[in-house]
Image 1 (cartoon, rainbow, N blue to C red):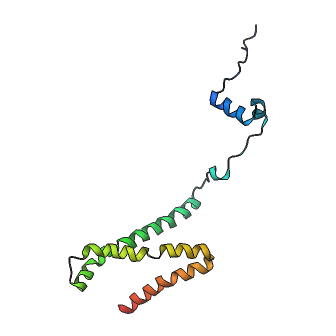
Image 2 (image 1 turned 90 degrees about the horizontal axis):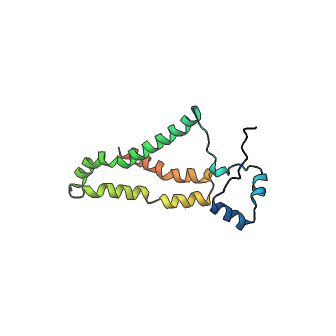
Image 3 (image 1 turned 180 degrees about the horizontal axis):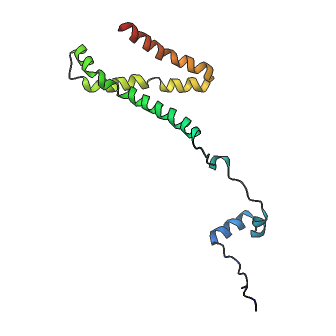
Length: 139
């Protein structure tokens, strides 16, 4: 006597059977196909060590500088209040700064769309450099 039991056919879910019959693919054809690789979008990169640090460190630094830039107005509020002699307008300082900071973001996006980066980056750095130059001259 042998202990091998007869192999029973696997029962597939009804939805899978319907989808295969609607597509015209039989289960035999499906099993004969070679396994396909996952699309490129679904593949996850495996980064570790130095490569991961070289990605995370600059991204963290940029995030820190953006948050510092957006919160720097709170340091300047006493000086601004003294300059304009108006304590009632304090609530508008942060909003005005954020509006001025974000006014050119859509323009910058269009410039990057229509011009190569070698032209766009220096072109968009001109206002920042002018702001630093004017601040340096005033001090």
